[in-house]
Amino acid sequence: MIDNSRAVLENGKEYRVIDRIEHENTTYIYLADINNPQDFCARKEIEENNETFLVGLDNKEEADLALKLLVEKHQNN
Amino acid sequence: MEQKNIEQKDELDLTMASWVQEKKMIRDEELAAIQQKFYESSIQSPDKKKRQKVYGKKYIDKEAATLIAKLVIGVAGMIVAFNLGGAITKLDQYNHTLDQKIERIFTLEEQKELKDIYHDPIASVIEAYKSIQTEEDKLEESGKYDYFGRNISGEDKEYLPFDEDSIFTLTEIEQDAIDAATDSKIEEYKRSVK
Image (tube, rainbow over all chains, first blue to last red; front, side):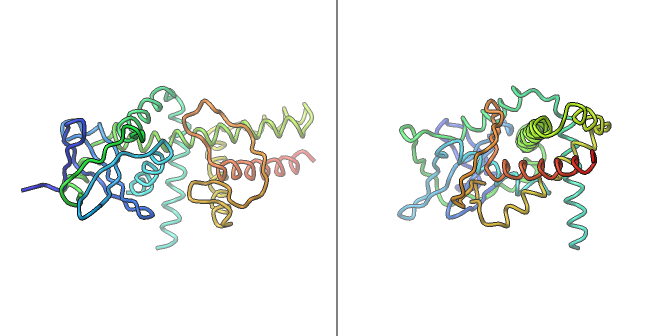
C-alpha cells in the first residue's frame, strides 16, 4: 500500500510530509527526513494528466515565501 | 475573545522583543547555516530541476504534529531563527536610521541628552519593535504594497541603506515602517528638548 504521507526524493532519502500549505494556486509541501527530522525542505506539488509531481523551488525568494508561510501558520500554536 | 487575541498578540510581541534582546548573542553564522541548509535542500536551479513523480496527492503524516514539536533545533529553531533574524535586522536598521536622523537634526548637546534617555535597554528594544510592527500594520492597509512587501504605488522613493551583508533583507514595507517609526520618535524627541 502506498503511503501518501511519505515521499522519496531525488537524493534517495525518504521524507515524511510534515505540512502542506496552499498559496495562490501553488501547493507547498514541507518534508522532513524520517531518519533525521532536523533535515527538512520544501517542494511544490504539481499535477499534470492526473499524475502528481514534486518540484524544487525556483529561487531564494520563493524559499523565503515558503518559510514565511510555515512561520505564519505555526508561530501562534 | 477579540480582547484576548489582542492580549495574546501583545504578549507574543513582548516575548519576541525579549528574545531579540537575549538572542542577539546568536552569531550570524549560525543563523546563516540554518537558513542555507533549507535553501540548498529546497531550491533547484532551472537547468537542474527535475520533476519527481509521486503517487497521488501528498498528505500530512499522522506524526507531523509530534515531529514539528520535536524539531526544536530544526523546524522550530529555524522558525525562531528566521523570525529572530528578521527582527534583529529590523531593529538594527531602526537604530541605525534613528541615529542618522538624530545626528542630522539635533545639536551635539541635545544628542547627548537624548541618548541619556535610554537608561533601560530592554524597554527600548520592546518599544522600538512594537512601533515598527504598528507602522507595518498601517502600511499594509494602504494597498500600496504587494504580498512580498514591495512598493507597487509607483511613487518614487529613495530608500535608506540597510545592512547588505545580512541574509535577512528588508522589504520596502518594512523599510517604510522603520522610516515612519523613526520619524515619530524624532518628533517625540523634539518635544522633549524644547
